[in-house]
Length: 230
Image (cartoon, helix red, strand yellow):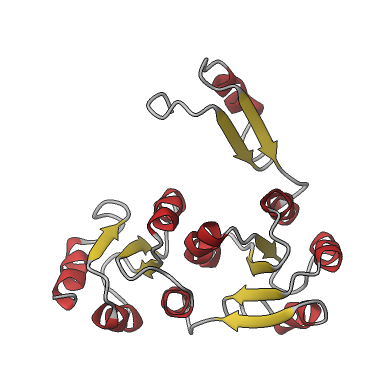
C-alpha cells in the first residue's frame, strides 16, 4: 500500500468481511483521500451493489456464491476487462434482491458460469424469462476454466495458472490477468488436467504465469506447461 500510494480505496463487503479497524488504519495513510465501502446485507447483495457501480446494463455474468467454488475467479479477468458485472447466486434459487435487480435492469444477456450443481436449472429458468441466457460449464472446475478461456475473447499472448482448490492466489492475480487480457486456468497442485494440457498444446500463447509458490503449483506442473508449449 505504501509503495502504490493510491488516492482512493474501495472496500468490498460489510464490517464482518473487512472490519472498521482496517478502515481506520487505512484512513491514517496521508496519501489516501477517499475510502468507499461497497456492501450489502450478504454476499449476494454486495455483488448487486458492485454491479450498480459497474453500470453495464447490457450483460451480466452469474456464478454461484458458494465458498468452495472458484468459478467467479475463473471468469473475473474477462469480466473485469469488459466491465461486465458478476452476480452471485444461491445454487438453488435466485435471491429476491437479484431477481429485483435483473427485472429492473433487464440485461440483454446473462451468462451462467458452471454446471447445474453450481447454478441450478431453476436459476437458469428464472433468468431466462428476463435475458437471453447461455451457460459455460465443464465437468469440473478445471474444465470450466478451460471452457472460459476457449469461449471468450482473450488475447493470445499470456495465460495465468492458479490452484483450483485454494483460491487465495487467484484472487489478487485476477486483476493482473485482466490487464494482460489473459485467462486464468485452474490446476491441481501436482498435475494439470487433461483439458488444460490440450489447451496449452493448442494455444498460441507463449507467456505463462503461475500464481503462488510451489505449495500452490508444483514445479512439475510448471515444467509440463513449458514443455507442452515448445
